Amino acid sequence: MRYDSPIRTKPAQTTEQITLTECAVLGVLTQGEHSGYDLLKRIEGGVGFFWTPAKSQLYALLPKLVERGLLKARRVEQQKRPDKTLYRITPAGRRALREGLEQPSPAVDRNAFELRLFFGEHMRPGAVRKLIEARRDSQAAHLAVLEEIERDLDPTEQLYEYLTLLAGKENTQAAIRWAEQALELLDRK
Amino acid sequence: MRYDSPIRTKPAQTTEQITLTECAVLGVLTQGEHSGYDLLKRIEGGVGFFWTPAKSQLYALLPKLVERGLLKARRVEQQKRPDKTLYRITPAGRRALREGLEQPSPAVDRNAFELRLFFGEHMRPGAVRKLIEARRDSQAAHLAVLEEIERDLDPTEQLYEYLTLLAGKENTQAAIRWAEQALELLDRK
DNA sequence: TCAGCCATGTAATGGGTTACATGATTGA
DNA sequence: TCAATCATGTAACCCATTACATGGCTGA
Image (cartoon, rainbow over all chains, first blue to last red; front, side):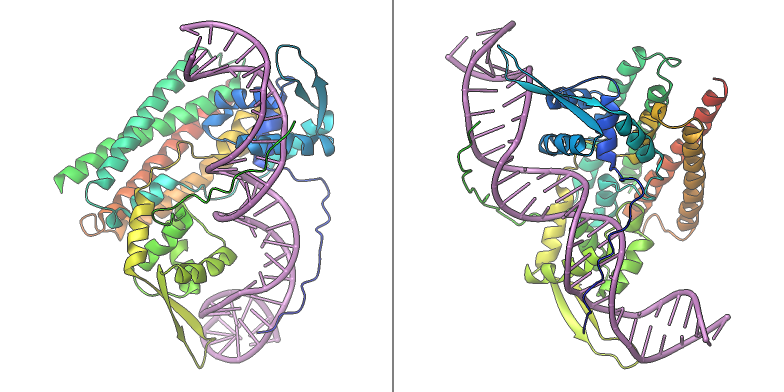
C-alpha cells in the first residue's frame, strides 16, 4: 500500500478551543485568585465529583493558560511557607470559558462500571456480585455526601450548583435502585 | 530548586495490566473471530454505548495484542473485497481479560454534561436551557434505542447484557426526570 | 453515476497518568 | 516525634483523537 505525504492543513482556528479540563480550571478561578495548590483543594470538594485533573497536569496547564492570555500570574513570596504563584482569570479567559462551556458535549460518556458489568460472564463467579455490591455501597456513601452539601446550598443564590446537585442525586439514587434490583436478579438465578 | 535524576524503577509487573479499551476489544473477541472492521461494527451496537475507541486506535492496538500473545491473527485473502486480517482470542487473552475486568473501577467518572451545568452561570442566558433540552431529547432517544434492544434480549441467556441494559435504562430515565424538573425550576425563576 | 460499504492503515499532536523529588512548618 | 500540610514541579510514558490516504465493488 502506498501513501502520499499528508498535506499539512493547520485548521485555521477562529478562536482557540479549550478543553474541559481547562474549563474546569477557569471555572474555579472565576471564584477568585488561587494558587495551583488552592485549586486542587477547591476541585476536590466541588467539580471533583465529575472532573479530576491530575496534580501534574494542573501545574503544567497553568503557565500555558497564562501564555495564552487567559490567566494572569502573580508571584507571592512568603516567610514561613514556600513561595507561591497566584492565578487570576482575565476577560479573555472568561470569554474562552464561555465558549468552551457552550460547545456540545460528546454523545457517549465512557462508563467503566457498565463496561465491566457487560462482560461479567468472563469474570470469576462471585466477582460480579462483589462489583455490584461495591457499586451500591460507594453510591450510597456518595449520596450521603451530596445530601450533606445540599444542606449548605441556597437554590436561589447558587442555582446551577443546585441543579448539578439534583442531577447527581438523581443519578446516584438510580444507581442504588438498580444495584438492589440486580442483586435480587442474581439471587433468583 | 534542585532535582536529582529520577531512579528508573520499571515496576516489576506480575501480569501485564490491560486497559479498559483492551478489555472491550478482547471482550468482543470472546464472541468469535473478527477483523478490525467487524469489531468496529460490533462495538457500535453494543459496548459502544459506554466505550468507543477510535478507529485508528483499534487498528494500532490489534497487532500489539498479537505481540503480547493475547490474540492470534490470521490473514484471509479475498477476490471481490480487500484482504483482511481476522483476530481470535487466546487462552492468555481470556486470562488477561478476566484480570482486567476484575480490577476496581476508578472512583470518579468524568461527566462533561455535569461540568458544563455546574458552570452554567458563565454561559450566555438561554444556553443552559438549550443544554438541558438537548440532554432531555438525546436521553429520550437513547431510551427508545434501549427499549428496542430489550425486546430482542433473553434475560436468562444473556444475564449480564440484560443487567447492563437495566442499568442504562435506569440512568437514562433518571436523566430525563431530572431534566424536566430542572426546566421547571428554570421557568419559576 | 455516485454514494456508501469493505478493509486497512499513517502522521502528528494532544491529553492525561504515575512515579519521583524537595523541604520547611505545624499540630497531635 | 511523626504525620500532615504547604507549595511546586520534572520525567517518562501511554492513551486517544483528528485528519489524511487508498481503491475496488455494489446497489439505488
